[in-house]
Length: 241
Image (tube, rainbow, N blue to C red):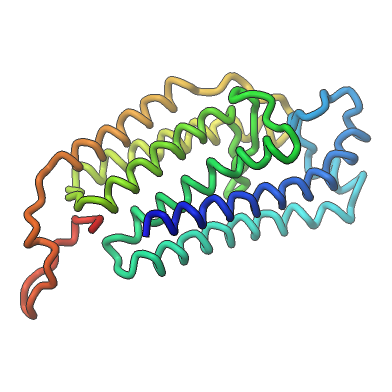
């Protein structure tokens, strides 16, 4: 199953990169028209909604299309993971493998197709839902590696995620998301990104990954995963095989 999820993530990463190449073919000429001094290959400063509506109203609608496309992408990844996993306990690690592989190879194929990003410290727009996320490419790459690794571990062995682990994982995710979105008002208004919140991001990575690794070290009896008889309570806090 893991091999299939990775293969899907690689192929879907190419699809995502190809879509972005098309979008930049549309977006870049408009951006150069409004911001002729912007260095080639740089996404920032972003065009504001007012600038895009005034200069290229026919392209303004694409912003809404892109938001829905991003949401549909997440639904597709979740659906493939559910089909591959076959049950609820294995869905989350399956989704982690597919999502992380997709994110990693998105950047690999962008580099091969258009030579972008110039480095791992190049700033990127990660998502637009619910507000623009922005970070150096290194940050989502580290998250993707962590997510894929954790997913592969959970597919290989059962991992008991207890309430305290879930709390730490949730906190870690929230801290990482805040580090991605904390500057959205500035970037959405057409400003250059401020310094990335690396300390906040690092704490989020440490807390989330540390919680998972601690949970993975807990031995789970194999009988916990045998199909249980009627009347027995299923272990709800177990993910993986």
